Image 1 (cartoon, rainbow, N blue to C red):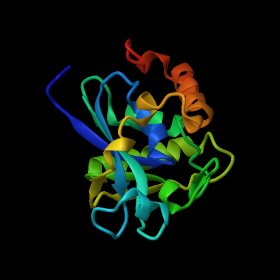
Image 2 (image 1 turned 120 degrees about the vertical axis):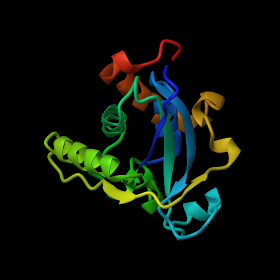
Image 3 (image 1 turned 135 degrees about the vertical axis):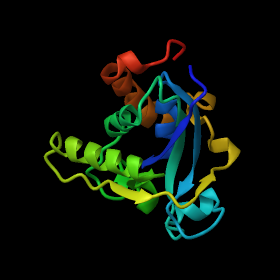
Length: 180
């Protein structure tokens, strides 16, 4: 792997799901669960869960662009959640679960918009994913980091995350790291 790193910040439902998925991808060097897109600085999980902060649960994905492109990161994002449901993924409902891409610069914005336009062709319903500038990222509490690996037998992990990982492993087999 090269020394270069890029970062993507994405929300697609519960951050535990995205965290678990991106940790399996070759070329991803770090994943941090957190909060973005709201008004309150340094929010807590309890505050974000109320929906009153405006923050979404997100993951910050650091990756090696020589091994994995930003377009590849976005391709995985579209594969692991439903971008046509506003403010929800499955039973997780609220603005904190919205589908959103936070871009860092014009290149990421253009890539995200092109990716969204391309993915729209595959969905019969409108893609509602927001594409907005990243203003701030706040890491979530430690117990949310790498949640799936630390709690694999927990009910949510078995019922919600495991099926997403199975789908990811099938649809992106070439991208799964050997140790996953």
